Length: 343
Image (cartoon, rainbow, N blue to C red; front, side, top):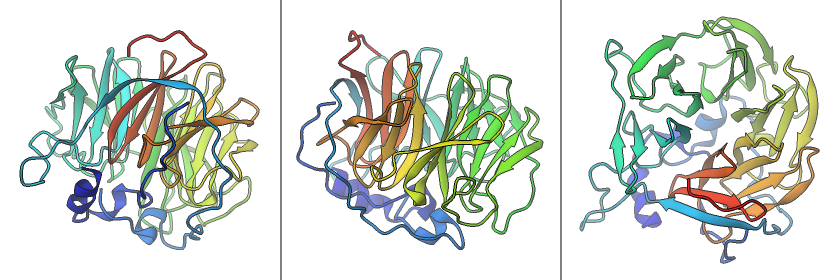
């Protein structure tokens, strides 16, 4: 089925898959469109050699609590109506799993019986499109969606578009290309600009506050090469999946560099999440794994051997890890060190 899906999505725009999926490893679990390097990384990006020669992944003991197939196929091998082809992101709000369907330009919810139902209602914002939207974040009962064109769409728990934040920021060498979004406790918005190799902080109205990165590909502490997903921990520190530099970078709330995470352990990191204990989870599409690192950056192990093919988005909620795999669907894991409970 994954091969059929790859054939279908080859016709979709190139901005929706960072990295080609290869066949997953045979190790068992113990712990849209064809990729275009220039499109995904932005003009002037320095390509990372692929694949990286990574050390063997150590299993991180985890229990697979639930999986949801986001794409089903008809007898002709085509995606059935209602399928989410290459989902872009996942978030948890109002006790429900929400999935960002960039190809369909919608948000869907996972019902108790595991089926998918669209919840997005544009209302007065019929001119706003979620087609190609790269990232979504849940804050309390609301969803914040970074759209391909730049506006940030705020959606309430019923799926109604509540407001639209239109970013005001310095121009870059290339058109703004959002890839990740995170919110601070005070309501400020971090957004990554993959094409211009920078991460920007906006206030709640979308007005520019500060920037990390000089707008060109860099490997140093204050620069990026195609930054992707973002996360903020309980102390307000910012984590950036620096995709083409193959690391995660951590910054203080003021944008001061603190540490590099995952060096030599990541091939194509696309997203990052931090749980309440400070454990950092990083999705690696090229390695077909989600790798975990301690608060000080020590490698703890990896989840998904033999299960994941193109893990693109990761989120934590209530002690659970949600992994959005673009080819095989949604997976919900719990580390074995914590009591198991349903999502």
